[in-house]
Structure formats: C-alpha cells, structure tokens
Amino acid sequence: MDDLGIDVQVLYNSLWLTPLTRRPDAEAALSWSWNRWLAEIWKLGENRLGGPAVIPVMTPSEAISQIRFAKSRGAVGVFMRPFERDRMMTDPYYYPI
Image (cartoon, rainbow, N blue to C red):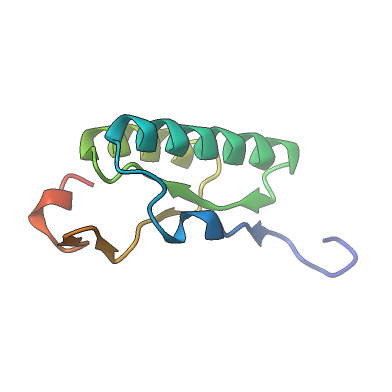
C-alpha cells in the first residue's frame, strides 16, 4: 500500500450479496463472525484496512449492537441489500437500524 501511495483500503464483501440463511439466529452468528474478523483485520492493518459491517437484518435490535461494535473497531459503513426478502430497505421495519 505504501509503495502505491494508498493510505486506506476498503475491503468489500461479495459473499453477502445474497442472503446466506433464512434463520435469524444463524444470520446473527454469521454477521458477528464477519464483523469480528473485520475488526481483527483493521487492528492488524494498523487502522488502514476497513470495510462495511454486515448486519443481521432479520433482527434489527441485534443489527444495532453489531453496528456499534463494528463502528468502534474500524468499520467504514454498513452493508445492506436494497431488497431483503419481501421488504425494501425503506420499509419501516428497518427504521431502528
């Protein structure tokens, strides 16, 4: 990165382009796994490698705690699909997020 003059690299997660499960508990566990991994990479990269937090959209209250965790550990955004099963991201269901 230094040789190329790059100060910060944003890591994008293509794995999450489609839902991985229909189970809210599994979605929360998978999201926590990604967010903890991302926090570790940010730390190892000396705050130069960041990425968007992945959130469990089936449980908005859990999503909020994961966003707070990820933000405090280098996340540079939140990954959310525009259509989530039968809801658009503008649906009032997601307002807590």
